[in-house]
Image 1 (tube, one colour):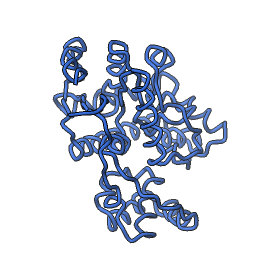
Image 2 (cartoon, helix red, strand yellow):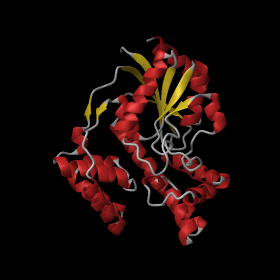
Image 3 (cartoon, helix red, strand yellow):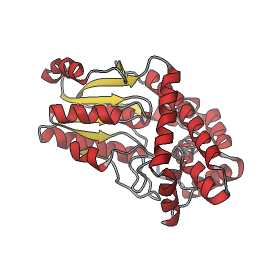
Length: 308
């Protein structure tokens, strides 16, 4: 295996990727490149599990807080920014760590997707968005399921922007976006480290506890601030786990207990989709128990990888 090293740390939400990434970065003179489609947004800190200022001071992070909630960052844009960050770290003699749980971000970088350059059709987008508003995101997702089942399996129905984009490519080109995403592997020497737990129920329980911690840390106030800043709950950024339900709590009177329960259920669904993605795009991931992993042992195992 040739090329400069790129260490990838992946796993389901709330499993401990950030802490492991920081520990390795500090030990091996590395810096972290984020692979989380929610942590790119400013002002959305608690609900996205964004690294704290203290954690970001402990190890430099890239591709976090790079757009406002009403701005879009396409997959091709993310890929270009990630490659630029990784190449810059290599030039500075640093070890890049790609850390996150967004499957498309991880695969676009590590598999070298050639993302289709299809110009947006704003009229078509408006029609599809109106359909979703009138019939629900599941109905829109069902249309994608008919046209491109592979893409539908990989895109969360709540992420209306991505569903619309996949439909847009299908309808404008007559091709499936999943077929157009050709691969040209990047010139990196890859090692994938995955964090999980022995039982799926343990992963869900950990995620539930994390939601409770977020609520205690001020998640509701964070959503209130976003709304006060003028960011509509219909924005794609606000489809992230918890944000829409807490907006409904604040604007529609949904009981907080119900909003929290819905957030936990959505998180379980999201975790299932993450594992499906990891299985379908496995590049030899070395899986570890996220609650029993010895960082010291892992660092010794990384020595051979770093030596090339």
